[in-house]
Amino acid sequence: MSDISRRTRMKKNLHDIMKHKWLYAFLLPSILILFIFKYLPMLGNIIAFKDYSINTGIIDSPWVGLKHFKYLLFESSEFWGVFKNTIIITFYRIIVGFPAPIILALLLNEIRLIRAKKVAQTIVYLPHFISWVVIAGIFQFLLTVNGGPVNTVLGMFGAEPIPFLQSKEWFRGILVGSSLFKEAGYGTVIYMAALTGIDQQLYEAAKIDGANRWKCLLKITIPGIMPTAVIVLIISVGSTIRTGFEQVLLFISSPVFEVGDILQTYVYRTGLQMGRFSYASAIGMFESIIALVLILTTNKIAKSMREEGGLW
Image (cartoon, rainbow, N blue to C red; front, side, top):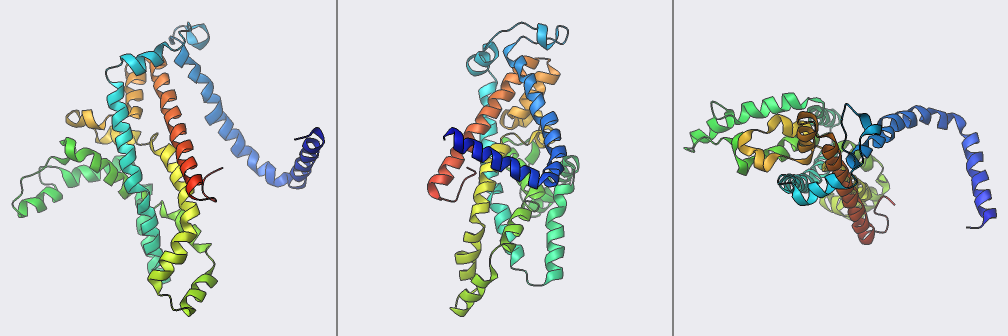
């Protein structure tokens, strides 16, 4: 780009900003909050390259380079097991959790009675606003061996009680199921918005051509929300690996620690409980790098499959 075209573009951008200055002014509080709570804390990641001590502080702590990363990748006896758990649970959440809001949104969209549709939407949105502490209590009540409704029903069919929350075979499924129960309904919000953006004339034209509701769903509705679904998938792949701390912390117990411990709880345990702040910071940076790689990979795949897919 030549200097003349660059200056012309800069003048155009400044003109647009001045023209819409009050709209940009409304953005300033959000930008300031984002900078203070998201970007400034990144400076603290410097302790991943130091032997940080609370007594000496960040500035005076000695530099150790990649010491903590080398220990993390080549010497730690726990890290790779925790990393494996995180990847597996993340994979399960994406495979089950990504299509669930889409299916639910399509079902809600087929409800023709407005009042019934609003009631159904309220019911499916509600779990999102319930604390994980309450959700964990509900699942513990339902799945407990001693008098839990699920084991009571199984007992009616002659089955032995199953300690779901203490079983390695069931624990990951319970994490995914409880996450689905809490977030799937609220995840339909963005798809319901996308559905309202589909041109209704397409449905009218399809009906004139003899298409039934199933054909309209396959040929108009699903393709209409697909670009939105691709964006949500890309964001979900990166964010899912960094979520689940509160949920796992409330559900996990010693019998399932081997299959339930994830990077977030590992960071909490090593950093806050053991006081190994530099090592915990190195784990957090490694987790962020993995999330970035997953986002870039998913975005690349989306771009290769669909020209209008992807974030950029």
